[in-house]
Length: 467
Ligand code: SF4
Image (cartoon, rainbow, N blue to C red; front, side):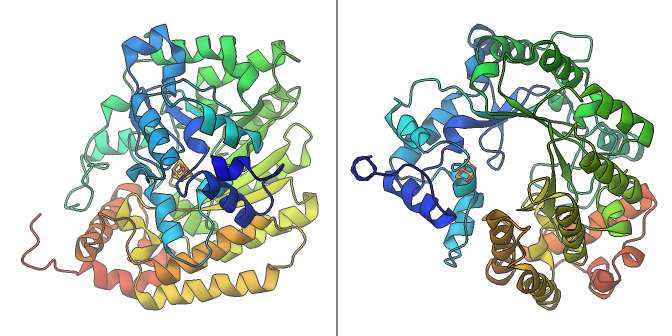
């Protein structure tokens, strides 16, 4: 911390300026490990930020000390490593971006600069054995969801559970070491709706004692949070405790609501001062509906439009999960966001591009070089055309630039996914079964990918790879 302490700095500055300041503490420093958490109360798991693999929270200890929902032994060890300049393995997402050597900005910049610069000193000065108070929290109460997106799985969606229960496990997948698509992931929902869930109890205890004072932002995720009674309990808390908390409430919603339900929602949240909506979308039309099974794209467009026209919602953020199937229409999806920005304001709607790594066979890096290059050039054209558009934020331009670089430079989705034949096998196996189970047609939906896909589904694994 000495270098940092000798410099008079009062604000983070640009993305590259933020990186320099973090690196004054250490080249692996990231404030998300201290102040940001994702907690799945249904399964009693956590991680921070949302990129590293989740790990378990101790059920018995958390009843006594709810702060252990976030301050697990593993995170404390990761904090020690970051202060010592070591790179926690779970943060590979960022190390991979930084290793590209193209000035690409990793998420440790974005996920640190949302806190005041003083937080860097506080984190560095706090003994690693201490519990810290969260500033941003993403929380999931349960996995109830009406969508079954192709890159999701039964751990996060009851619609996915139904697919597995009705049709059995997906077969022939060999790169998915965690078996995401072969069982119903009962460990993701340890308690039924009628049972007392000690993790949920701990969360509300911590919320009442500290979190409502310390949190800058509470984001509810799922499943689909609007289908959880606990989301409405929190919304009602904010309505009846106006003035007690400055926490900004945000909800990750698939916005798969009918118009009536959307109107009911808008009416119920109209007195909340800070509500923001995060919604996933990375493609358009039938491509979007293929990737996000359950989606009615026209209804989604209408719902976003209505939210932007009401004063009840402060902002809508479109989260793009960059997978192999979205690249052919991603530029058109960004066009739509830019139109909304132009009409409703730069800050009323924004986008982020998050590169999918799991399941690895759905990564954009599975595509053949010719298609990757085609889509990379398309995105580069979009960026060239819009780079100086006053409605774009710096982080949006940087996200797009890093995706363009990623498609150019990075060859495998993550360090264990080097075996392209296995990934190709799984791509063909998975989407053949997905088409049958969901009544879809890959070739019709993605004409630019059809020739390649047809070659994939006839693909024969080399003899030395065993299923
Ligand atoms: S994955 Fe990146 S942003 Fe997330 S905690 Fe690790 S270093 Fe920070």
